Amino acid sequence: MGEKKGAMILAVGAKGAVGSTVAALVAALQEEGERSSQCLTTRGCLAGLMETGAIAFGGWDTKPHSLEDALERQGVIPREIWSRYRGLLEKMEVFSEPKGTTLGEKTKMIQEDILEASSRYPWAVPVVVDLLPAFGRGTWPEFGSLEELMSMRSDSLMPDLPYALAATRMGIPFVNFTSNPVEHDLLVREALAKGAPMAGRDGKTGQTYLKVVIASALKARSLLVEGWYSLNILGNDDGRNLSREDIASCKLENKTRVLEEVLGYSLGDRHRVRIDFYEPRGDCKEAWDVIDFSGAFGLPMSMRVNLMARDSVLAAPMVIDLARWMVALKQVGEKGLIGDLAFFFKRPLGESPPATFHEQLLALDRLAMMIHERWKGHEEHFSPV
Image (tube, rainbow, N blue to C red; front, side):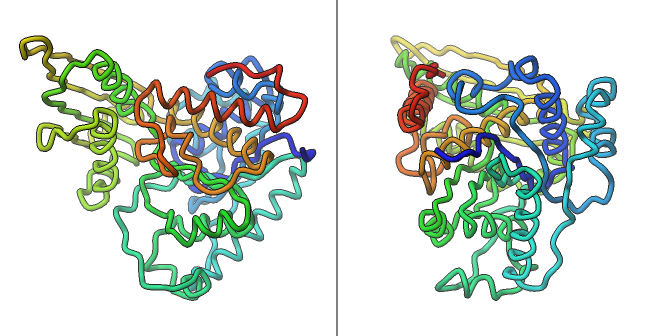
């Protein structure tokens, strides 16, 4: 294996609620190592492959203020917590959004930024993580090659696209934590050609994570789900953005589709999902689920789930876990869409991604075992997820 044994997270949307929370957690890991790693699922299954504190943070954002100002404005983490790491946060470099008319011009600027960031952390593998707001379904123009696509004006395309292109064309891992469908077939083909692992789509942080767990448990008991109503209430920028029906469409489709994939049958209009913006909640998302199911003799039963969670606090460790997975996968030669990382996503992409909670955990164990076997001399460190 190569000498690179750390991760450099390059977040697209680095100063948003999730991005700034990731930055603070990275600083905590740099400062405290194992003491701050209890929220990471990779601390066991990837043990021995990279040090917990071997991690760096950077990225891009349109906002001119600092990461410390972003943490203050987002209000996700109390100041008395993140201010402990002010010195480390001040050293994290976030680039401005690239300026350019064509997709190719923006892609080239991003690639230059990646090279500059990599020169600061030669011990780390860069991983580009897409944390931009939901864009909606978007429309792909007609093009026969990536070169043709890159000659087009960028203002008519998904804003995440130049970052995905820059990463894959450089052979750098790319994680799509958003619901934006940037994984065009030609982009995936480029990732395979350049040796870049990809993972996505749409991070599964709170309500949908529990939906997969509960639906898997009901399926395991052969209990028939008759209906499922889900409501999300959140008051951060993500909630404001998703209050627009045209933008929320992909997110709602992913939240709906995941239940059908777990159960193996469709509930039709008996599965309802809503996202409502309610400013007083801020980043403290509230989720309600009403689950109707039946058992022997078709007798009805029902369950209520009320989750009150900090959305970005749930998301940030997942981003770091994914970055660590991508570093390990890159080091052992994996490339293209990694379906076995379905555990992390509402709409997992790749070849036959596992659907139920149990299947997803088994897939992570298989993936970790494969990495340890290829990373010679580390098989004894393997610990199941």
